[in-house]
Length: 211
Image (tube, rainbow, N blue to C red; front, side, top):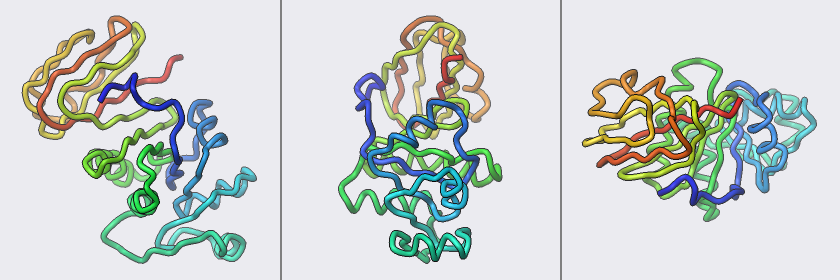
């Protein structure tokens, strides 16, 4: 997969129950979503912004009683405690045949929730989803094997290995090598308009937004 090959518009946007988007890039994605799935707790802030999603999904433990009544006709309660609400939303979209998905609002709350949400991107990729997670600072993209993606000079980039072997890079200030801990691939920087990565296995790429 190449970042340049990703469609410009996602089929669906998921709003998770972390920090509500405030950067213009995720805000625009939220406001212009072709199909918006809201994790149940996230509707409490979304409703204050006068945005109505297409579907609200979750185990019902975070949605206010007022919003449960107000949005009863679009609320789907899934009581499965083996998955979080973000994954419930992904599964719902997968059953509808929707595989091109953007996730917003998945970070900025409890750190353990944020780490869990981010790491799940690798699972979604293996399930056939073309998924990206936009935060208030940048975006996470799950990848495997060899990839090439567009950057800009000075763009901050981090690489997180999920068992990838033989990591090599071109276009990064600090060339990649075998990563045995998440911190080792962080705080890197693009030196031009393209970065290529060679690897066997899975990794996450984090790209800072243009300033």
